[in-house]
Length: 74
Image (tube, rainbow, N blue to C red; front, top):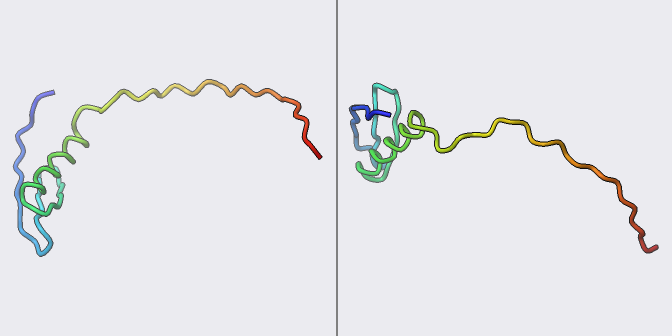
C-alpha cells in the first residue's frame, strides 16, 4: 500500500481544534491542534488503510446437543 499525500487543515474552536481533510470530507476534533490532526490521521487510516485482521466469514460449526437426565432433590 502506497502512502497518499493529503492536505489537512486545522482551525481553533471554542472547545479546542478541528482538523479537516476536505478531499475525503472528514473532520476530527482534539484538545490541541496536534491531537486533532492525529485523530484525523487515525480515522483516515481506519477507513482507508489495510484491514486489521482477516475476518473469518465461514459459518460456525453446528451446535452439539445432548439430552441428559438429572436427579433433583424434592
